[in-house]
Length: 166
Image (cartoon, rainbow, N blue to C red; front, side, top):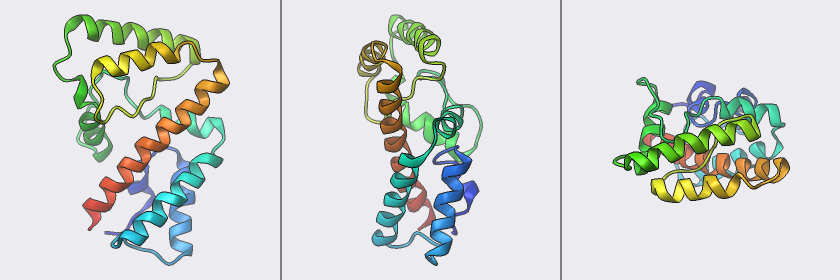
């Protein structure tokens, strides 16, 4: 399977990121992610492009992410990945879920966007602790954290995309 911009958008909903990564792959003559070397290069290009994104491009990517604790709807690849990534939320007790809802609200009021965390392999309690800690960040510090979390999510999704494409 070729990696189109649409495929890449399932990994990161920034149009600028998807176009740049797809453009790099086309310029380098890559059509498929079939070898470990190609995947490593794809991941490196992704990281470089993510580091160069302007904040509005990051916000565009954030807008595609559901709140922590909310299940992404639909059958799209990205929705399925999101549900899997947030599997640590499954079975969280009511009080913990309520605390996450309140934390999400406070975070969005403070920073103006969804709380983003690479939730894969993390429990609801760990996520809540990080959310509460990050509420104390200033805007610039939090933007740096968000970029790192976005990069981690995108990297995981690129690996998933490559597996599906093989």
